[in-house]
Image 1 (cartoon, rainbow, N blue to C red):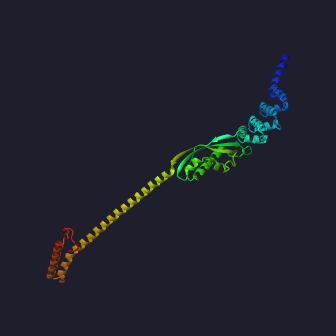
Image 2: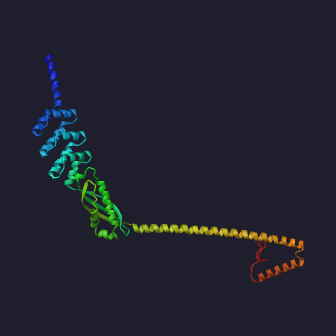
Image 3: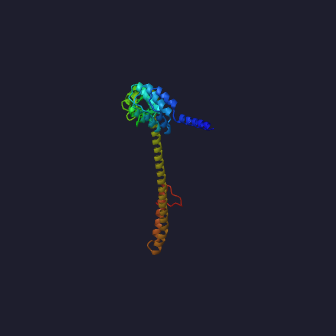
Length: 328
């Protein structure tokens, strides 16, 4: 019975030993030329670092001829949240392409959130970025719609803190708009589209970015609307509406003035009628006071009758009875 217990305990200890001491992986590392201790690999598991990830990366680096990379460097990068295998792949690609790239740079680029392996690939094989359609208006008012292809190469030294592709596209689009806008005629742009490329390329648009612009080629350019004519048409329509509004305002003022003059005329006529109504009263008062004799009154009536006859003979219409003539 004691022998069975001892055997069981030995088996348990053996499996514990196998689980914490990756002997097979250590043997593989030794035969691959990677000098790493068994205790170091065991401590990696205690620190929750997969030993296989570190050992495989060291074996890859050793077989590719990379020097100066230690397990502590890889372990620190893994614990910082980096991708160990991508960093090693990027270092190998950079070394084969004679691109200067240290482990610290590669690790920093990877931790910055950029794909360091892809960056090295773009540095070796330049990438072509196609801009969206960029609309601009020449000085003759014709709209042009251009599409450009920008060939860029990654700049390893500026990957950390450098702007990305969106900034390149925005700057190129701005340069295209400026170039077309400075052209006197859209025909000049259509005849020499490379003029846009040369002008945009001379502005140093890759400054402060993670890329180096190698070339800018105009892939397509189309003629859009006649913006100048459209603006003139809109301006003419706006001027017409303003003129109509002013004319309506003048008409309203004229109507108001006419109504005001009519009101004043009616007021004046009412005053005249009121004044004429006072004349008989004044005559009666004069007769009572003895200031006017009966013969004087009769002579005045004769004069009025004679005046009415003369007006009738002269063709002057006599106003109706309800509207007394002020000449009478």
